[in-house]
Image 1 (cartoon, rainbow over the protein chains, first blue to last red):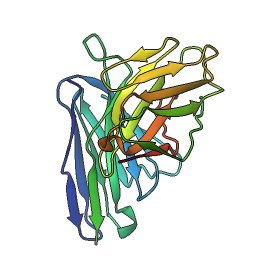
Image 2 (image 1 turned 180 degrees about the horizontal axis):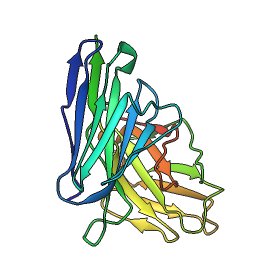
Image 3 (image 1 turned 120 degrees about the vertical axis):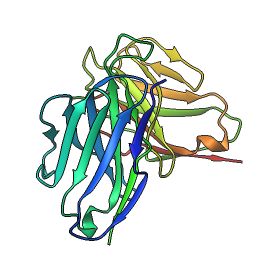
Image 4 (image 1 turned 90 degrees about the horizontal axis):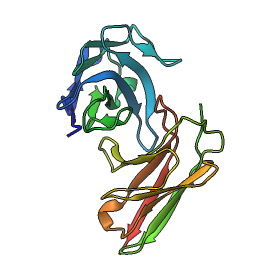
Length: 120
Length: 106
């Protein structure tokens, strides 16, 4: 149990294009999903918190118009990097927090495998 | 929100116990302590969590001091595959610190 998937695992795009990354909780329902970005040899940096059915809450310094987040269901959140530039190249990781009521501990977050974005 | 302090790196001999400390002196009464690890180029993996009592699962043990201001993650018999960055988190919103890079050596 507690599996989170991300798609795609790796993407290369041209500067100026948009890229969508999907995050799915496969065997549990998640009211809250988190999006992180990680640069080489650095820790994970929280970008935004996504709640199902409502607008995402962005961390200071993260442009909401550039990083569009949609959390349309209890099992799916998407991050769209709009007008990507080379400096957006990074490892993007999502996590999902269990709704609770099942075998998985409530409030524990489970992470996806990450998506490596390279913008040329 | 509590912050955590961890040593930047540690080494451990294969087969020996790895003891990873974490200080969280500003933790509040209802905040859990979570431990995750990240192997290179992968998403973080949940290890264990606890509130007050010591906890043990198939991966590790978590020892929390009585005043809850610090904790220790114990990997009882470290293997080479345990080489990773280990993160201690006490904030519900899951902001990560720098973690401890554990290197298990043969």
